[in-house]
Length: 77
Image (cartoon, rainbow, N blue to C red; front, side):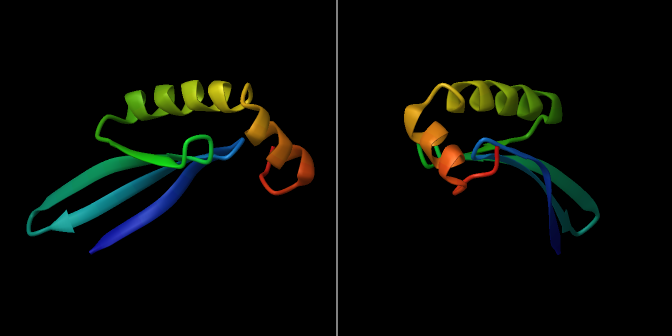
């Protein structure tokens, strides 16, 4: 069984918490996805996931393509 919850979503960057239950063990990971380079990363440490999210949002807000998508309403600001 697994569950997913979006923790943060800004400037085309999304951070999702993924929880998987297997036998008697719970595994939590974080998926960071971005429109900037159409890439996804799986991160196991929550603090690192939040830092990576902040870095990617900062980079996305400097990307002319992402800024155009935000201005056109295609992405939330």
